[in-house]
Image (cartoon, rainbow, N blue to C red; front, side):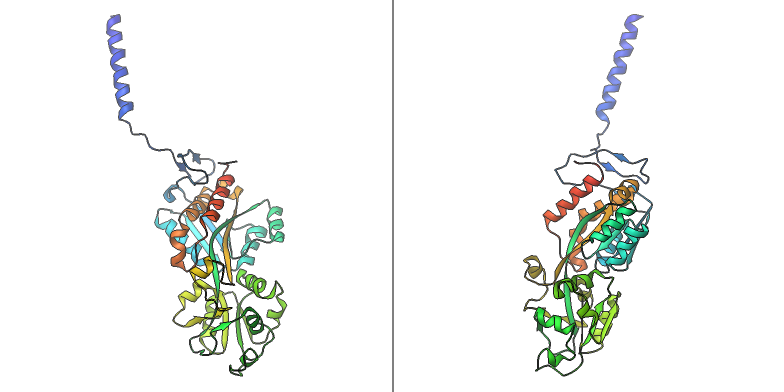
Length: 338
C-alpha cells in the first residue's frame, strides 16, 4: 500500500511539473485599472527613465483637461489616439487659454490636466498649493509664434523685433513703419489676455510690459484664433500672431512674416535662430495621478507617443532629453522611483 501511495505522489508531481512547464510566462507590466484601490503595479524590466507600458483599454472613467488654445490641437490629437487604442472613458479637452486653464486647475480644482503655452507662474503655484495640489510640469513640444498677414498684403515680408513692437503699439499706419508702405491704418489682431500666446508675445517683444499692446489703436482681442484668422484674411492692412499650427491650417489664406529675416520653420526653431519660439506644456498633480489611474495612463501615453503626432499637428518635437525629464517626473509622481 505504501508503495502505491509513493507511486501516486510521484505521478502527481510529474503532472504538476508538466503543467508549470506548459504555462506561458507573460512579461510583467504596469496595469492601471479604473480605481486607485484596485490598481496593480508590477513592472517590466526597463531602462532608467523609461515608462512602463500601458494599455488604454485597461482604464476607464473621465479625464478633464483645459487651458491653452495653442496646446489644444495637440492634446486633442493625443486624446483621439488614446480612445482609438481602447480607452472607453470620456476625455474633455477645453480651449480656454493658459491663464483660465490654470485657474480651473489651481483655484476651482475641477480639471485633471492643465494645458499651457507658458510656464506656470509662482502665484498660480501658490493657488494650487492652497487646494492641496502640487503642479508637475511635462513639456510636450515646441511652438513657433507665426506673425501673419493676408495673402493680399504685398508689402510686408519681414519685420525686425523693433518694428514688430511698433506695429503692435504706437504706430498708427504702415507708412510709419516703412515710408514705402501704404499710409493705411494698421489693423491689429491679438489673442486675449488670458492666452499664453499673448503672455509669450508680450514677454518676447515688450519685455513683459503689456501696456503698449493694450493701449494700441485698432486692437482686436480674442481667445478664439479663428476670429484672428478671419480678421486678417479680410484686410491687406491687418496683422496678427498666433501658434504656428493655426497658420498651417490656414496657409491658403495667410502668409507668414519673417522676424529679423528668419522665417518660422523646424530648422529655425530647432537651432534657436527664430526669435519667437516657445515650449508647450501639460501640468498635473501626483495626487490626481494616483487617485485617477486613467489620468496617469493618459499622461504616460502622451509622453510616449507625442513625437509621433506633434509634427502632423503643426508643432515641433521636444528634445529627447526634455521628454526623458518628463518621464522621470511621471515615475516620481507614481512613486516608482526616488
